[in-house]
Image (tube, rainbow, N blue to C red; front, top):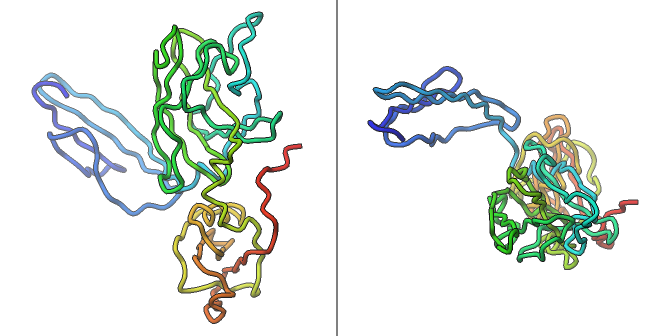
Length: 294
C-alpha cells in the first residue's frame, strides 16, 4: 500500500462515499437496479504523490450469465481431440471477449461440454498445453464462483494457472474465461457432460409452461424470488428454474418475473387479479434433455 500509508478516497458520481487509510477496497451496501451504471473514482495520496483510478460499474442481474451466453460449437475442444502436429497448435490467446459468457457444445455428440476436472493428457483438446478446472464445478446453490484453471505443460499438471468464473445454469455450465497471456499455446480443455451434471439440479422443474387464468392474473402469497429487467418468458423460466420453482408470474411491460413454490392447482383461491401480470402453469410434457442443434 506504500509508506507512509496512503489515504484512500472513494467517490461515486462526484460524491465522496469513503475516506480511510485502513484499506483500499470499497465496502458499501446500496440498493441498485439492474442495468444502471455509476461512475466510481479511487484517489490514493501520501507525501510522495497521488494516484487515481476511474471505474464504471454496470449492475447485472443475478442470472444474467444464464440468459444469453454465446455458444461455441467446436468438437476439437474435447479431451478426445488430439493435437495435429502438422498444423500450428491451437491457442486461446485472443479467443474470448471479457464482457461475454460462453457455453460449449459438441455437435458430434449433441451434448454440452464442461471443463475437465483432472489433468488431461498432453496434446489433448487440440493444443500442446490444455487447461483444466482445479476442483469441482459449482452446484446450483453456489451461484457464480471464481475458480482456478491449471495449465498442463512441460510435464507439470499445473505449470501455470489463471482464474475464471463459472455458474451452473439450466442444462449447461456457463463460463467467463480469460484469454491466455502465456508464451506458449494454451487452450481450455472440455469433456462431454454425458451424465448431465449441469442438468441434474433441474430435473424436478417442469420445462414447459403455459399461460392460464387470463391476463392480469398472478398466483399470490407464494412468491419465493422476484427479478426485474427480465425481457421475456424464456428468461423468466430461467429465473424459475434457478429457484426450483413450480410456477411463475410475468409482467412483460414492467419486465418483472415472480417465481412461486406452488401451483394454482394446489392453491386455486390464490390465483388473483394483478394488473400487468400473467400466470404461467406447468404443462404435462416429457422432459427433453438435449436441444435440437440441427
